[in-house]
Image (tube, rainbow, N blue to C red; front, side):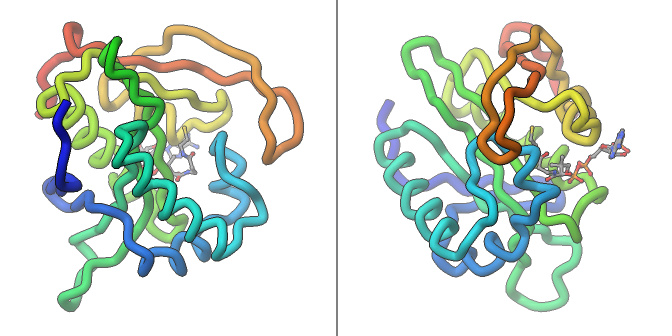
Length: 190
Ligand SMILES: CC(C)(COP(=O)(O)OP(=O)(O)OC[C@H]1O[C@@H](n2cnc3c(N)ncnc32)[C@H](O)[C@@H]1OP(=O)(O)O)[C@@H](O)C(=O)NCCC(=O)NCCS
């Protein structure tokens, strides 16, 4: 797949854009334990260096097309020209042979409950199927993470199984639920 400029996706009230070094402060500030404990691949406690490393590796992941991590901007709260950075969403583990990828996201706590993750997942799924030609998107979620399960289900993702894996942030083995959506089974989302 020829891929070139970083994509910019615009929804009704969010934009997804390339991560910038300028996002590192907010990423570091937002990454509290309530967020980190629900993610599989972030260190905790989270430092500015972790944020800068993440932004840097996001660039190389995009160049090699292993992953596409977007910054989420929220348009509704904007009172001036600069839109607030509110979280991250991405496709990871991109498998071009089987046309599939995994989904990951988090939103800064002060922006929870505004429909931002739901809108982000909707944009990403649409982009992955319509623009990238992917056929399958999956996501892993801890069973107690009811808000995230709701976000996945609202976007038409279905529970297909459970795995048990070591989770570095909590330092133990934990069960995760696997959700999936296939392009062929997708109902057209509004
Ligand atoms: C999960 C997360 C991304 C949700 O972000 P958000 O922008 O607040 O999500 P939305 O507002 O789009 O939707 C949340 C939905 O969950 C529901 N919800 C929230 N808490 C809930 C709970 N305890 N039980 C059941 N539903 C809950 C909300 O009511 C809403 O559903 P609704 O629109 O039908 O009312 C955010 O809480 C987060 O970043 N958590 C930490 C990181 C994380 O869990 N990432 C996902 C890993 S799989």
